[in-house]
Image (cartoon, rainbow, N blue to C red; front, side):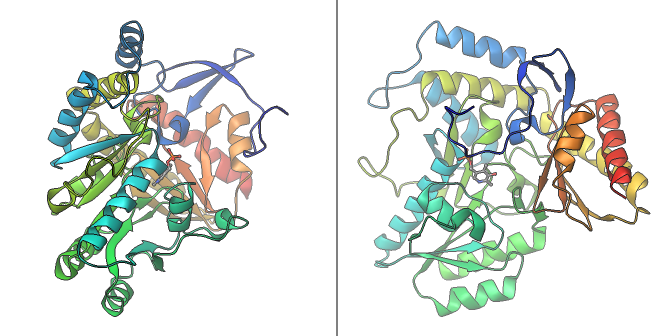
Length: 388
Ligand SMILES: *Cc1c(COP(=O)(O)O)cnc(C)c1O
């Protein structure tokens, strides 16, 4: 491990293969995966459609650059536009880069209106990535520590507080956009209500701001619709996604709508790898499988099932506070810090995650079945009981 920079505290396990919701380590032990590589492997591990798409494309053509037409990229853009109702797409290799594209769109939108020092409003507890701009947009002082100077052009407001958002937007004529996550994946699964999101949309319309939704984690079926905003009655101007889009093959996307769609012009932005044939072949298989196998609906019904069962088991428990999230993005909030649960769960053959100190984060593959869900719930309840 010494040859790898020490940026992650890793658990002492190494996986060598996977199948569906299950992973096998190098000693042959099996684990139920309720994390999906952090909301990435929504179709589970070694999904045959993704495997064959990767193998076929690898044997044909891996990369040509964006200086030429890319059939797989055009197919993927068409599918994403169709499932999202957005107008067009820029492809990147990660979520942070998708957000960088969104931030550049917002800034140029401002410059086009004569605002030369554009400001983007961002939320407390937000997570948008680790590049300098997205780290600045991220609402975690610990993650920012040691990396100043951060960028100018961002103002933080409390998440889910529409009155403060209104006040800050009104008192700053340089505000050009509001950027937020519908469910804060890294920020303890804090979940925006339909009402709040619709109020943000109305404020953006009123003040001619771009509404940027970071759906890097909530997208690709995770919350019960292809994108989370499709559960509400509005369209964002910009949506970013990544994680679940490639089922493990690195790819991100920044989708724009209406007036945001034509802001980036030749020479304004780019990526050498972004949207290359291999990544797009994998993502095409993912999008087609999510749509054809009705995995959004499945995420919604399995999410309800898991929530109901967790509630039944935990509602009277002294350490239980509440359930958060949407669909198969589930946060179990406890009254005490429980970072040790990741390792304890691993010992019981379950992969899960803890965010914001007290929130158990469950992100099982969208293909999880009832008996696997029951097993996950039993282990989670056991773990919480053993905390007392
Ligand atoms: C993971 C995540 C990112 C960053 O994506 P990377 O692919 O790690 O760069 C950005 N926003 C949200 C909401 C995320 O969950």
